[in-house]
Length: 102
Image (cartoon, rainbow, N blue to C red):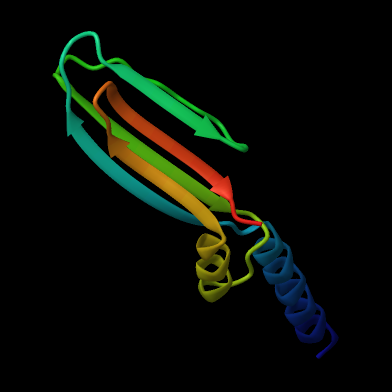
């Protein structure tokens, strides 16, 4: 019985550690046809930016938003509403920006 109780406590502790380290990810993808010489403008208040060169006359912007502190999908949805994300084509090329709403 002591072994079973210890086993259950270990399972609960490991589940708590895993849930504390869990993260929820949202991804927004947009693609645009472009011409040579166009500009790519990216503005963000935080996070990583990665640019990969391709062989097509196309730009694909993938915005990956990682919610480390969200404990549920609903909480991530609420946090997503506090983010202004804009991805679009301009006369000069493609623009992507993100910022937290105050």
